[in-house]
Amino acid sequence: MQISSRFTVALHIFTCVDTFKENYKVTSDFLAASINTNPVIIRKILAKLKKAGLIKVARGTGGITLTRDLSEISFFDVYQAIEPLEGGDLFRFHEAPNPDCPVGRNIHALLDDKLKAIQTAMEDELKKYTLADLRTGMREILETEK
Image 1 (cartoon, one colour):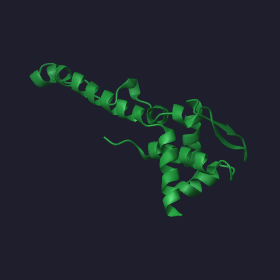
Image 2: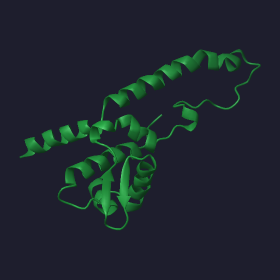
Image 3: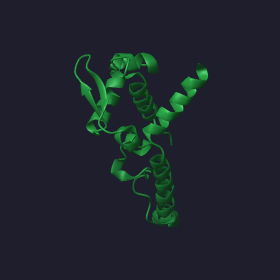
Image 4: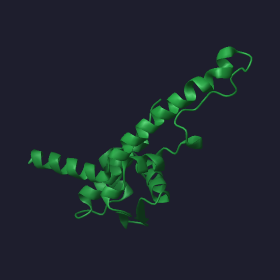
């Protein structure tokens, strides 16, 4: 299992918006240059963030603005926007295990609670961090680079 790079790209986007908002118009082209990817990929991610209500995007060269304070947007919020879970479950079961096999008919009973606990632990960790943590960390890094 691996979370796609879209999640970390989205965090990169938020960090750029916050870092450069005072001096630059942060557009998909601007972000694509920072992330070193195609602007189309950035626009797809921005569309998901907008749909989730985390950002507003002005057409053309209007730029990107956040809909909430950085401290009110958790990594979990971004994760949900970028990596929506099919049926709400992180782990996907193979289809129709064989009910005539003792393992097949009992695999759900064996794994369901454990997998749910793992998912809950991951989600709880994502909820601990906010975009404000990225702002603080970026400012510390930039200060040490001076």
